[in-house]
Image 1 (cartoon, helix red, strand yellow):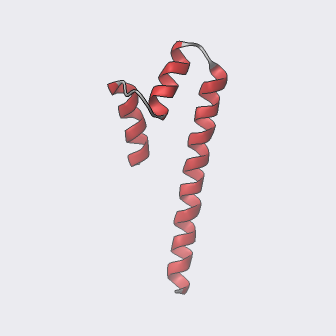
Image 2 (cartoon, helix red, strand yellow):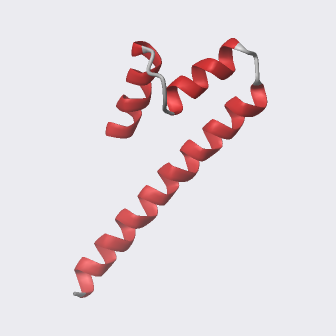
Length: 63
């Protein structure tokens, strides 16, 4: 949840660096490939987070 809030804040506040600023720049330039890459990277990060949380839950059960 915190990652989503950080990205949206970057989009609104106009940060110089970050995923939110890259998405806004791609939208302004109509660069759909860059926008798609950013979305895929975000989705992979989210899936990695879910996987690590499940692994941690499993490790706690058997530790």
